Image (cartoon, rainbow, N blue to C red; front, side, top):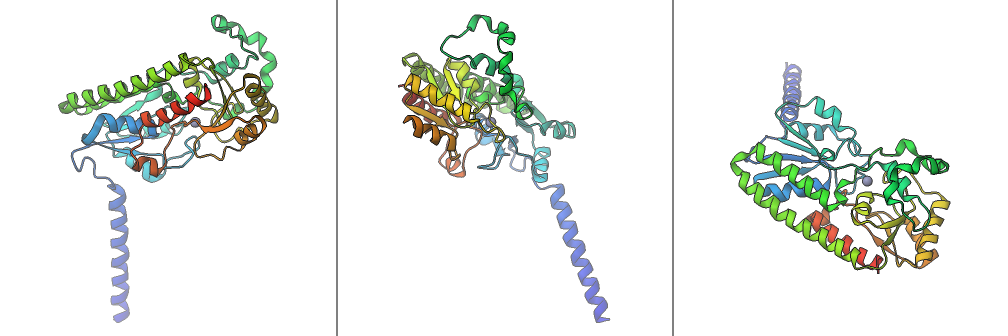
Length: 340
Ligand SMILES: [Zn+2]
């Protein structure tokens, strides 16, 4: 009898635990529990933009955990639940988040989805590489369509094609594109919550002014510098920045993900470039050891400085109130040293 009672008690306990777990899983985030719009942003730029526009009317969740590699990131089951409980899902595009398509196709209809890559003109990675693989200072800006034939011998550079993005996903590094991203998020928020339309519009306009100022300041720095050349020793995410400000560059890496290590020849090209033009700075990516940049620095005397790619930020940076604009302003300070 006693044994039976204990058995029943254990059964009841197990059942209640299972029920609790199921209930929790079914409804882990109470949608709009505080009346706020729930936004899920995959990367830091759109997280920052959504927070700036939405202010105290929204809750924004940054999907990518601090310090994780954005290109290889896969959402957890909890992430999927969060996305499904949100009002607005903002992602960079299929090149950055190839997993998004699957989630979106299984999503409830009442969730708004914003693919930011549709708001800008994407850079084709291979075309960009071809245009910039020209040796020397001559640029054929007018005839970019005649490159295929001359550059067939460059084929061996594309050994890592599988890891190549067809289109470069780092659109936010062009501040003018960042403005278009802000506008797109603003439009979504105004549709979702028309009662607060004016609030969102005012916040968006204020932040756009900050980005415009940033863009002007970078442009002015580049215009006022005799040197327009920069060198990268870390992974390369800067095509949109290079294109926006018409800079010349040499990079050890061809792309951004972790897979493509530069060859000795590519590192030597960067060393020669720095020596030839007496460049004072070798850039590398934030939160990396900068191994190759160090090699280049030791060979040339160029100083190692971070060019932040703004994919992601650390917990400390979030605590300190880092924004897209504040991080890009640090980049501008480092750029001034590089162009000097
Ligand atoms: Zn990247």
